[in-house]
Amino acid sequence: MFDRLLAGYEWGLKRVLEYRFLTLCVFRGTMVVIGVLYVEIPKGFFPEQDMGSISASAEGAQDISSAAMWNHPGAMAMIVADEPDVDGVGYTAGSSAFNTGNYYISLKLRSKRGASADQIIARLRPKPAAVEDANLYLQVPQDIRAGGRTGRTQYQYTLQDADLDKLDVWAPKLVAKLQSVPQLADVTSDQQANAASATLIIDRDRAARFGIQPALIDATIYDAIGQRDVAQYFTQLNSYHVVLEVGPALQTDPRLFDKLYLTSPTTGQQVPLSYFVHVDMTKTGYLVINHQSQFPSVTVSFNLAAGVALGDAVTAVQQAEVELGVPATLTGSFQGTAQAFQASLSTMPYLIAAALLVVYLILGVPYESFIHPLTILSTLSSAAVGALVMLMLFGCDLSIIAIIGIIMLIGIVKKNGIMMVDLAMTAEREQHLSPEEAIYQACVLRFRPIMMTTMRAILGGLPLMLAGGTGSELRQPFGFAMVGGLLLSQALTLFTTPVVYLYLDRLSN
Image (tube, rainbow, N blue to C red; front, side):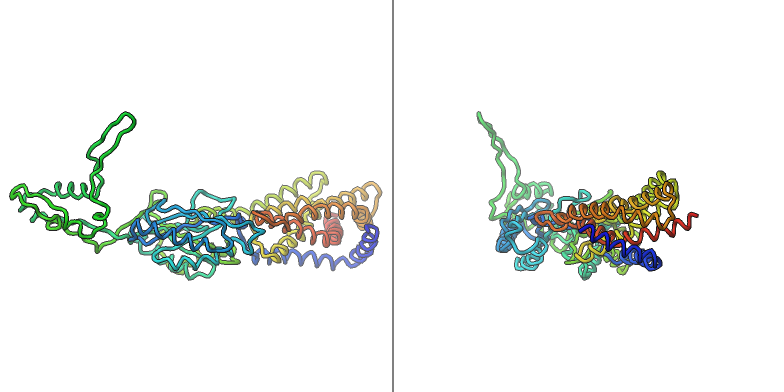
């Protein structure tokens, strides 16, 4: 088989060297394609994995009672458990605030369910709407998380302002704006500034006429609903606290103050507590105020819509903030994984350029030339194009894992050029062959080892590309980049490298 391939390659190589300008046009076209693909391919951070589980958080209304909140998680758990691909559900209520709850959803084995975790989330998303005054936010836990911040959904964007009132005005506007952005899903925030507030107002004039001090009113209310510790009993094995309070039924009775009486020190008569106090519930207050770097903050959380890359979502959030026209004092920044993605996106071109520069310098030392290392580096263009095309064909983002695969191609693909250039330069020095004869001889002699080493690398990358199972989404982009880059570079560099060698040799002379 190798002999037949070699015979066809020799014939094709003669035609290429005879009409070398065609190959050079292909090489230049490859460079153009690289620029186009770098702009068009979606960019991500780490691929989203299906780990066989889903984490969720529930949020009730800010004026919900603790008893009502305890009923909501159970109702939502029953809705989630009815999903055919869900294996089990566990939940807790009141973990961070009394109106919140957390869910731990385990899925069936991947081989026993017909949908991915993201597809299950899409099916579950509208179902909890049947539970009144509560929302459920779902996300898929990941093996790799950047940053320690967690939210109701996968990604976070934090707003900060020293003026809390300004933050209360603009944060809901940004949330409403982002909810209309098609690239995002499950947009929510941790802002809770509309909680029901009860203000107890004492009529001091009435209390003074009966000789009752405000401290007595305060103590009476605390005795009723404040769980006052009034005594402690000790035994040989334990100690017991005696707590004073009204019965649970009276604690939830809105007419509690009508049933509590105070004895007037001046008249000796008992007067209902409601005669001296009334409750104002017209105002709202903060259930929680979050801070970041000592400033009040509101964190907006979101998931990605189906088929949307993280880079597109980041751009959409920034564009929405610009269109909204937020004040200059209101600063926004991504947190967690989205923040790490921004940092990596800004430094990745410099890292790739540094890697190419190091390779160029290392290759220049043994060849004692500034020109011929460029011949070897010319093989990288087709490998990068092949990797990007393969990622696009299979719908993968240009993630960190894919970029690692592309950088690894630098070491694998440049060995094709090294094999040919090294033998060609040796033939020129020792056999006194012309550059064209030397590169032709090098290509024919190195065809077999180039094909064997490339096929070995491709076969090694196929399991990464094709294997499934839990967490396979993290490995697949590496396999796609590796196999795609090797396939295209193998098809092109065997013909483009001799042409580039001849042109650069002419330039060096």
